[in-house]
Image 1: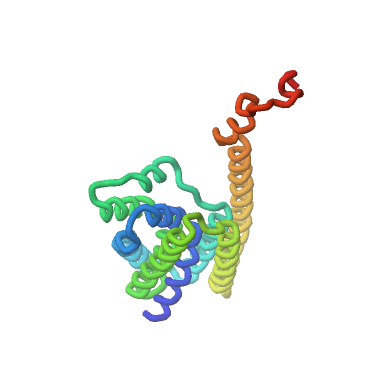
Image 2: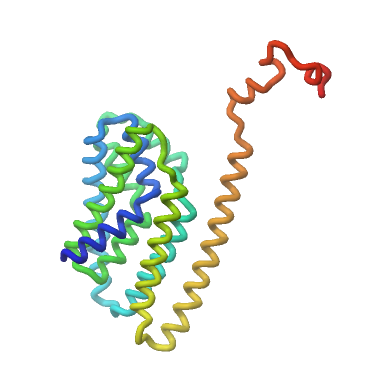
Length: 253
């Protein structure tokens, strides 16, 4: 149980770094009391991860250990690529984070539960629960996520700005790739030729798709950033905003 707790804590803590849930935690921390935000995060995480552990535990009972290690390794590869891509809040999630409800606790808890459904931390918890002590996975994954979000809350309150996402994302991705290599090595050691023939092409395909996805996402973000011009900056550079326009501007050059 203790080994499962420590493993789950480390994996989920890394998975949460730079995740959209962490971005939401920082957003809430700028507006509400930190202990209310963390209490809501703890409640939401405990509920979501309890469901994840339940499904992962009973799913793991019917699947061979070697196969689960291979699937877990491929999952960690996906998580690493996902982390390199970076997370962002869509319009609906951003509006939920900024909305002031009648009950701050319920608002934060519900938004975190919705954000975690299908997220990589939930998938990682399911994966870990298939082959480890379920109680240790539940406690460790819950503490790991709350600890990562507590870090975001603390930094958000102190700096009022976001974390250095690129540095954190690269470091977290490297750790995920290490986990992926470790699990794949364990799963493929002594595995059949068929398992080897299926796993290696799958890993290459996942990596190729991930690289294309990352490049397309970063290109889109660069294009959006280049197309966005703040209204204040536009006013400041417009001819009408200058009290003494240059001759070039006055001549329409």
